[in-house]
Image 1 (cartoon, rainbow, N blue to C red):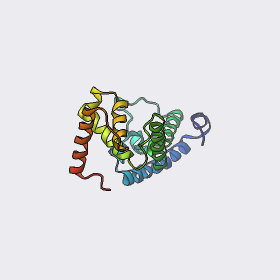
Image 2 (tube, rainbow, N blue to C red; image 1 turned 30 degrees about the vertical axis):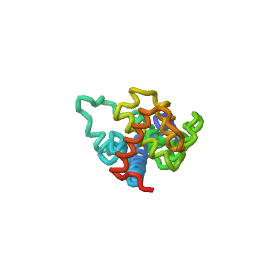
Image 3 (cartoon, helix red, strand yellow; image 1 turned 90 degrees about the vertical axis):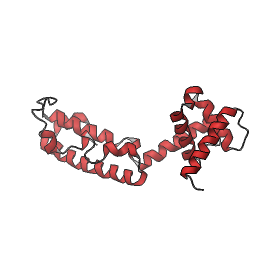
Image 4 (cartoon, rainbow, N blue to C red; image 1 turned 60 degrees about the horizontal axis):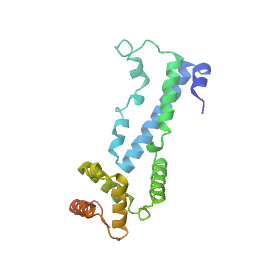
Length: 184
């Protein structure tokens, strides 16, 4: 794929705009498919109409004259927009394969830190608990490593030495069961 310099020096504005339009359409479809599969609310800004890189060429050109617009609709500006869009499209978080790779890397990292009981089957529970602990303020009291180790001990059926953390885990478990997020 050509780089920013090639776009800015060798491509015509018309060719860059055509490529931008094509890449924009691909990006929108990619995000819509990902949102359909995951339902991740962090993707909402990327959905149709929610993100500046999804502006149509017509919309970009209509920005002229507004106070934030600099009168530079040059080939370099269009090349930069296209390059930015391609970089965004290549982010690991914005593809299913990339998200799986991040998840596997995270699990491997946790296991390398000694949390051997955290695996693919209980990773969602682990992240749910850690997010809950963060929202509740448990992570203000304890380091995240200590909280994660307590959860790891609880998952493996071992004895959780810290009674306070065990109480937090049991409270989280009862909250989760009342919502019924995880049915085995």
